[in-house]
Image: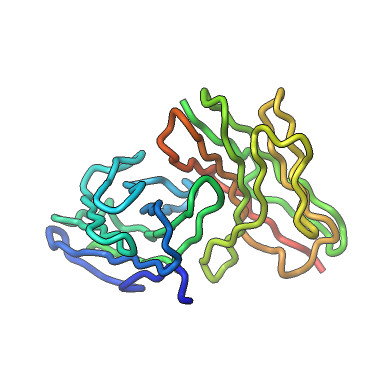
Length: 111
Length: 116
């Protein structure tokens, strides 16, 4: 039981490049979330999903897209990376109304 | 609007002493959950404790307890008998049930340093 995994762990992009972050969970959770963490700002919700095939915008969705084609996977896409998207990205999943289980994070640098 | 406020950017505590980390919240949701997470320097987010808005008693988990004062909209974390391994960032979070689409809202965190 791996819990929540994120791929990749580190990535450096140039401005304008695109990439996809993959989040996978093996706990059969309905809810999945993508956050970004910046110094002094805590975690901010980018997008989330309440089930397979559904997605919704969070607090800071601009510049990101997501897809949840399979229940266990939640993909975060950056179509044209900007330096302002340099951050640590966390994925989380939740079975319902209780706590979230977090992945280890992805450190992204955009130059 | 949903908001979590942590007013203590940094705290120090002597080993074996107790410490309280403050958290206040604002929500229009009649039903909500409050959470505390720990983030050590290694970066992972570790769930510590949960309090439901309709729970009559304050939550406890080992050395962690949540001092829930609903009327004051506060959910302070109390760590008893601090240990060196408690040095970390601590985040308070809230989850609405009805009006906020099950979104979580996090505070900006408190950095706790335990002094030997």
